[in-house]
Image (cartoon, rainbow, N blue to C red):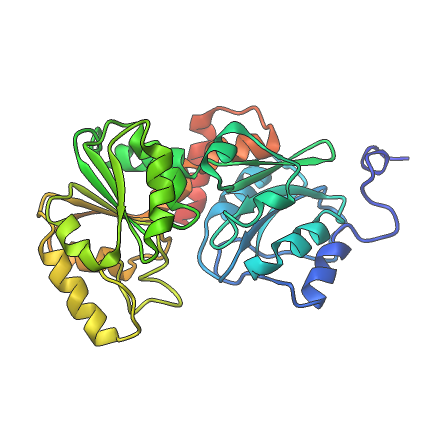
Amino acid sequence: MGFWSRLGFGGRDKPLSAVRGLIDKGLVSVAAQPRNNALDLNSRRIKRLYVFLIDHDYPGGSAAMHNAVFAHYRLPYRSCFLVGDPKNAAEIFAGLKQAPVYFGGGAGSGFKDKIAPSLDRLDRSAETIGSVNVIARDGQAFVGHNTDGIGFVAGLQSEYPKCIAGQKVVILGAGGTALPISYEIAKCAPKEVVIANRTVSKGEAIAKLIAPFTSARATGEDVLGDELADAGIVVNTSNKGAQPNEKFSAFAAMTGDVDGDMAKSLANLKRLPKKAIVADILLEDMPLTLKLARQAGHRTHSGRHMNLFQAVPAFKILTGLDKSDRKLLKLMRKALEK
């Protein structure tokens, strides 16, 4: 019996038959937009599969970064984005675990705050934050981690060193990524962190969590212009400005009135000091929020930085591959630039 067979891999059943089953049931589909995301469901060569669950198809970079490293070191591993409905998170995850080669992966848009109940345990960061972006296999258990906030702050300060200390930071949105980003920003000595969200109670939950580290509060989108008037950094953590909401920016509430919402966005943006930095977590080349900010003369920061800088710690958690951060970052950066 071969090495992989002794570990439970191989055999008569195709290793990815459980994934095919999820696809046949309509629970997931292979995402089309991420680079190097192809998945051969008939392959018997894949010994580890890392899956990133997302609620809509967008150009995520994790698969390309991981697969570039796997190819460089000739590892029989594969990473792939699958699109599904977060309301089916438990059923999807149960199906993935039926594949012996499934070794975890990640939770992307829509899944970050939905996947935790299905996991065996959470590490301290994910438990504290209440959000998961990395799912790592530990024996037969699956453990949730979170590297989003660490990656965002590292990426932001690589482009704008020491930019957070003493600044009022306005976080737009209160979804699964807003929490870890707010948490890490709060530890960098900002003057204040304000979470602006349609549902104020969700922002208040984040503000309460980070209050031990900095002054924090929540507000509604109706007073966003007032909050922007003295902000030093603005961070969009919502999906406004990209598919399927590419006609709306994060500088105003999204009512569905494209022209009216745009007028409000421009009026609010006009109040933002010119020296302020506008950051986004979206991976599209130029989402509307950043486009408007750049046109208004503001410095901007793309979500692709977070995607890259969170990838190295996440990759090490997932794979246990003992390589230098510098080497991994070089391979991953090159994969994103292709």
